[in-house]
Image (cartoon, rainbow, N blue to C red; front, side, top):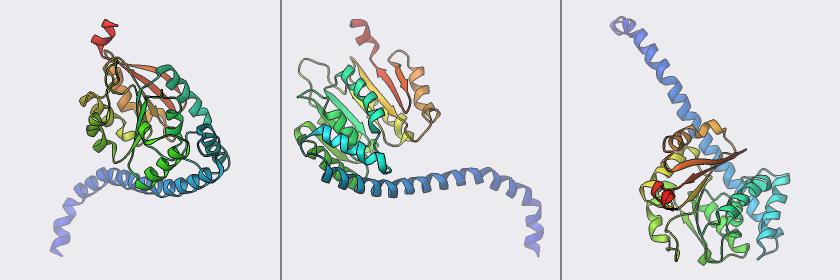
Length: 261
């Protein structure tokens, strides 16, 4: 009885606190559930996509691998970016002509194959994937497409853990500035800004120029507001190169390098 008497005056405060944090708790629960669903669906999708592409494509032919991916995507749910976004990505890669590229988020290996087939003979792709199953199956698809381990490396890790280790993996290009010429972010959009800051901090972006591609296939462009705000605040080294549906290209170049050139 005395407990009820004491608690009655506290009811307004209890209601206010519960209502204030109810939204935050609900948001956290929603994010956790969405992440779990993406993980389960992603595993199923990766397994079925890999089996289809592995059995239907012509081994050793990158274009056949991509065509088989697209054929699968016509009739099944797929995590691949598809031919329309893929062609837009191809245009960027051809224009940038990167020698060192980084892919964050491997999915089924589709984008890895698209990138590798456009890199120069001495080019190298580092792809980072958090899920071990996705990484293993994606790596096998890259090998099926005809590429060798000397041309790429798959890191099974979170992007936050992988980025500080990349310096030792990047072999300096002869006669060119060190660093990455192309970065493709196609993992968790909430990691885009922290990962870009980490790339800056580790000085992994090529000072003479690096294109950073932000994918947002299942999100709205507004969901990239934090990283875009950061880019617009650093106009001395960043600019938005192009904005397409599901893809934004930003360009990084150090100011002193720009003046020299």
